[in-house]
Amino acid sequence: MNEVLLSVQQISVRFGGVLAVNKVSFDVRRGEVFTLIGPNGAGKTTVFNLISRIYTPSAGGIEYDGRDLLAQAPHAVAALGIARTFQNIELFEHASVLQNLLIGRHTQRSTTLIDDLFFTAKARRAAVAAREKVERVIDFLDLQHHRDALIAGLPYGVRKVVELARALCAEPRLLLLDEPSSGLNVEETEDMVFWIDDIRREFGITVLMVEHDMSLVSKVSDRVLAMNQGEVLALGTPAQVQAHPGVIEAYLGSAGDLSSLRREAA
Amino acid sequence: MRFIFKTDYEQDIRLAKHAGHVFWYGALGVLLLLSPWLLPEYWLAQLTFVLIYSVVGLGLMLLAGFTGLFSIGHAAFLGVGAYTQAVLSNAGWPFPLSLAAAGALSAAVGVVVGLPALRVKGIYLGIATLSFGFIVEEVLARWESVTGGNAGLHVKAPSFVSWKLDSGIEFYFLCLAVVVLATLAIVNLLRSPTGRAFVAIRDSEVSAQSMGIHLARYKTLSFALSAALAGLGGALYAHKIQFLSPDQFSILQSIDLLLMVVIGGLGSVHGAFLGAIFLITMPQLIALGKDALPAAIGQAPGLQSAIYGAVLIGFVMFEPMGLYGRWLKLRTFFTMFPFYRRGLFKRQKSFQKSERLR
Image (cartoon, rainbow over all chains, first blue to last red; front, side, top):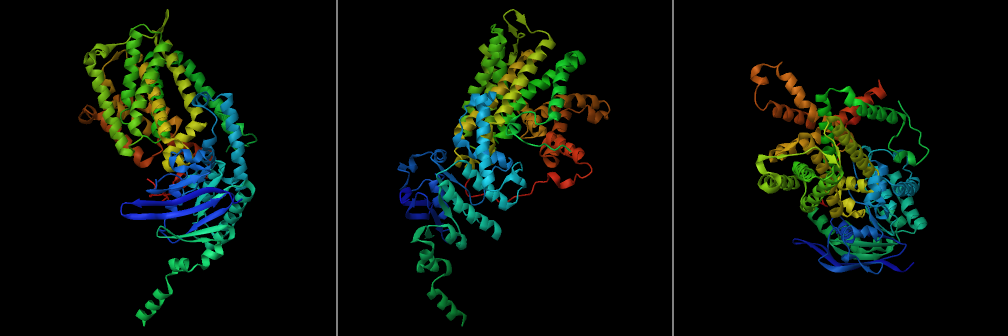
């Protein structure tokens, strides 16, 4: 349980003059739910994009399961067992839910181009096998009604779940969730809490997520890392981090600011 | 209305989804097999052209409609295939071999063109392929020892050992066989991981990448397959037209090909065929309608281009899903009668696409 799966060491990334992430280090242990919190622009999503190799850090290293992640090409990250969702939903809009989930199984493909062109018996078997796995995820996330619907016609809340489903179809070991509850209503958020808990418990998948909804964070996370302006503020259990003076200041401003505001108003 | 009750995963994989498909595609097949005896010679020749353009259209549909990469120089691949076929069959190669060679050489050229496609997107890819088209046209005109230059090149009828396909009917069946095989290949691709990877790249590159799809490999593959089909179409075209000159593979031809897939309906296999039918029948219809118009309009030069342009603008504005989209709406209207509503196919505008990860 305490074995480290993902280790981020002193990573920094600079966009022009902006230091978006500054020497951030943290370890994610196998089987835990680890959450990044922080005000907008804190660099949480940038950390995600660094892990999924969309950006390359200017300094520092990322180690995943004993391997140097930075030596991997962006498309090779998925094959290592890292799947992710996106903050603004990046589904394949003009495809059905089923097709989206099948694309999620791309890393597990066993057919060659020739198999695909002639749709050989092997391709047929692979297609049915992939469908079985996908159906299991559909069953788990209650997506049966939307199986054949086009993404373009689905409401936001359902798309969010489809994106989670697509990531699960890849059978990852590490799941990166970028704001899983944004845009969801109370009931859908409760479902999300339940699912994240189940993903960890039943499938044994380690979850790293960015989240703003503190009730969700404290319900599911084992540990929380608070960031502000690209730097680490605090690391600990949800309760510890919420009580941390630096975190309160980052979200609400310091007591000093408040009294100066009062003085100005008076 | 038809309700399909699904009890087996195989049902979603099968090509014919229900009895209606079996019946109608069967009827179409029988009609196509009988058409040499049903149609007069001239119309059979036109039908052959429709088949040839369908092959090219399938290729461009794979690239533009399913992978989201637009090529404004596709006539170049057509040209490479046509000239390869012409040179090889004049040298006495049997047609199955020369057809394969034409497809393979076009595919190889497609890979070369696909390489810049990995770096540029959208309009810039259009410009890159456009200039590639010019380069190929120029090469065909200048490389006189092989292509005969602007003087042109005669193409012998396809032959296989002692069997010569010099009648229109035999050649029609050759085209039909190629079309059926090409269609099956495309449809098979689309129901398997490769085709889904193409669709993924079209809809969201960043997300396709994080699903483990090697963008460079699949984009190159799409270019290669698309070029191979264009080359095959070109090879058949060479035999049909029997005389090649570089100006047949100019930018106008490229635009015609693009027009074909857009009007047919981007992102549908049917669209390639509907587009080909449109492309071949339109000049005939214009020729027929010419005499009915006042002489100032009917005899004006460039009438055909003007009409093509107007039709294209019309489609882009009012029916972005093309002829196939129109057909879908019509079919839905009748299957749902009288419950069809106007907004049924309306796409909601979405502003959720991430701007950050371009």
